[in-house]
Amino acid sequence: MGEVIVITSGKGGVGKTTTTANVGVGLAMRNKKVALVDADIGLRNLDLVLGLENRIVFDLVDVVEGRCKLRNALVKDKRFDGLYLLPAAQTRDKTAVKPEQMIKLCNDLRKEFDFVLIDCPAGIEQGFNNAVVAADRAIVVTTPEVSAVRDADRVIGLLEAKELRNPRLLINRIRNDMVRRGEMMSIEDVKDILAVDIIGIVPDDEKIVISTNRGEPVITDGKSLAGQAYNNIARRILGEDVPLLDLEGHDEGFMLKLKKFLGIKN
Amino acid sequence: MLQSIMNFFGKTKPSKEVAKDRLKLVLIHDRANVSPQFLEMIKSEIIKVITNYIEIDESELEIQLTRTQSEDGQGIVPALIANIPIKNVKTKTK
Ligand SMILES: Nc1ncnc2c1ncn2[C@@H]1O[C@H](COP(=O)(O)OP(=O)(O)OP(=O)(O)O)[C@@H](O)[C@H]1O
Ligand SMILES: [Mg+2]
Image (cartoon, rainbow over all chains, first blue to last red; front, top):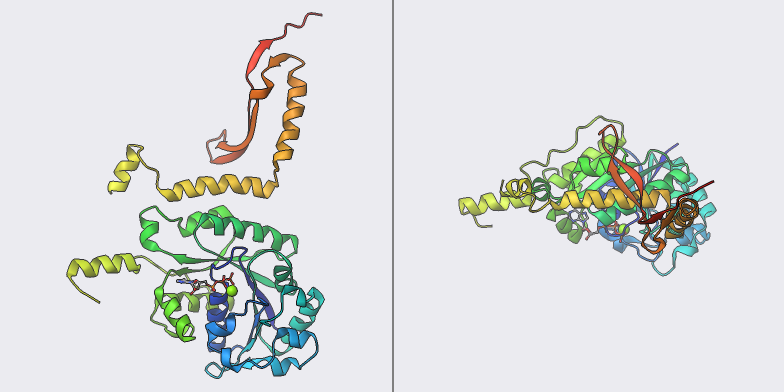
């Protein structure tokens, strides 16, 4: 029986979809069978980040409303063995799916896959409820900014109320140069405030924008810092004990300064 | 370095410290679900009790949820702080 993991955040735009795509690829690269479920109905995006937007025939709502078999709606990613996407419907809204339908869907997926990752929509309304209702574990994504951390705290409280205890925290878009200057909260700061364990940290990395432009998750670039970060997270989900990525000396600000100092143009 | 010298002289506080302080306070409110109505309720109860003994300036009474250094100096703890301006102490004979 596979495990259902929801990737959620409260605040929008902090990196849930990027996380779902990259961690999904990371698990598939480690020979796991993975289904990625885009629960952001009406604002479909996971397909784009994965570069699968042209291969969609049916969607999640088609499945729960019985218009097609689950098997036929799953888009197989030809680049990564074992990776499948269940796309969101684009022309419906969050009320198109009931929690019971989501539970049934996840139970069906659980039988076929080692991992089911659910990309949760922003907010704490019905879309959130649907996305978390069938989950065994939760990953809460935040950035080191006050509004994102506050919303993460709220979501952690809501998850606990739904018996989803011990959610794990992913701190995204860390800028080490700013942390060093004392102008951005550090990993420790955020961890202390939210009092939950960390599943991973991801630096703010322009490679993420570039890879999203191409529809090729950054994790495939094992040399990039963000790629390493997502690989570490995938390994931790599989139970490996991996130390947090060392961001020291890697940040853009420092490299740029160094390049300027040495007179290198790029 | 410049930053730390400035901090030393109390000129600026790094913005992350400000962020942490503000977050900790707002999360106490969020977590405790403390509404303004809730504080109003406490306020009117306090006024009721205190005015039995002391004449106070009700319009100036302030009550807020905040944070303070704990007694043992081990860290910051939430605290309910009331600022109650006294007009006169009632001398209760009998
Ligand atoms: N570590 C990062 N470094 C740089 N850019 C990032 C990083 N993480 C995410 N982004 C960018 O931030 C934007 C939002 O990311 P994403 O779509 O994953 O967030 P989301 O939480 O799924 O948003 P929504 O709440 O709208 O679903 C995207 O443009 C993405 O490329
Ligand atoms: Mg998203």
